[in-house]
Image 1 (cartoon, rainbow, N blue to C red):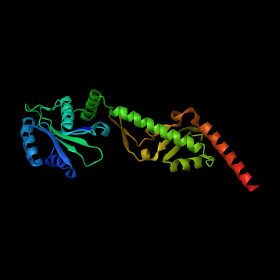
Image 2 (cartoon, helix red, strand yellow):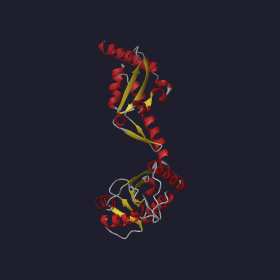
Image 3 (cartoon, helix red, strand yellow):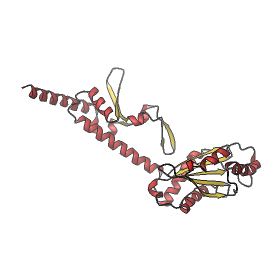
Length: 271
């Protein structure tokens, strides 16, 4: 289950947004609120927030996105229970909040706007709230027997690795690839780039196979952290990670074999 949690100043506009979703929003639950519009609800939030004027980011925005496989048969009460469970983990279930289900996209997801200030004027701790939010989501996933974000990340990593390995193996066995440059071109057509690293003396010291999709990605999530993807060392797979048979020495040997095979075919055609 993926979640996004942050502390913000809050606004009537943000409440209007979660109540709309292009006409596909459904209110799931609320606490301590009677207003209908964003302006009315925000005004009720502000009455409580006056108890703690020092807190500037006095509103908590949450987006809860469970995997579709777990929610395809969810009814309103199921979404309500999920939201309540999450708010209880955060100790926000007795604060003012409104939750709405967004259904305009392929994956239904829950938006919650909660007052960070309780009725005693106390603000919940919002330090590292994003990381805390994913940690609590993992706890709920485990409680329900669902895969965690980390589990899905591992699955995606394995799938990416298996695909990279399969494509590289296939193109190495393609006899038309008789040089590194031709291999690179073939891999690029299949959605991968082969980046070879050399030392100052020009000797090849390593290589990575990276999907073109990942090359265009600026950042990824891993264990609830954002990893900068501008650095190539975070992208794709080292050839050594794909298997011993993909060492550069072995690759060059295979390309030479392909070259000899193509020569023999050309010779046979010319006779």
